Length: 70
Image 1 (cartoon, rainbow, N blue to C red):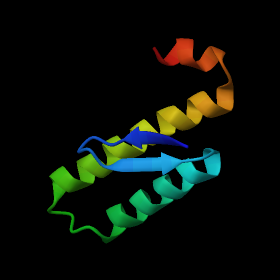
Image 2 (image 1 turned 135 degrees about the horizontal axis):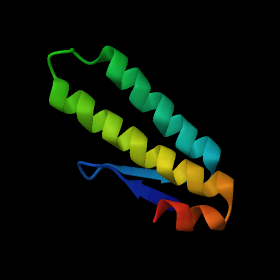
Image 3 (image 1 turned 120 degrees about the vertical axis):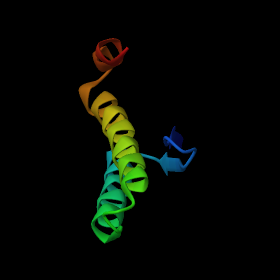
Image 4 (image 1 turned 30 degrees about the vertical axis):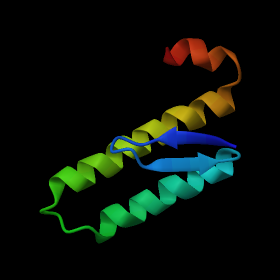
């Protein structure tokens, strides 16, 4: 099992791409249910989604993707 550490220290453990997708979906749902005046929190959610997507890209692109993301 691997873990992505979010912007504010939130841990997102995952076994595979499906696990990352679940975390991304949960964060999107949180964004839609968060009061729009809480911009800092919404920004933190988006930052975590970006980190999760970076890890997803690395998993789906194979060993050469790590060099592209460095």
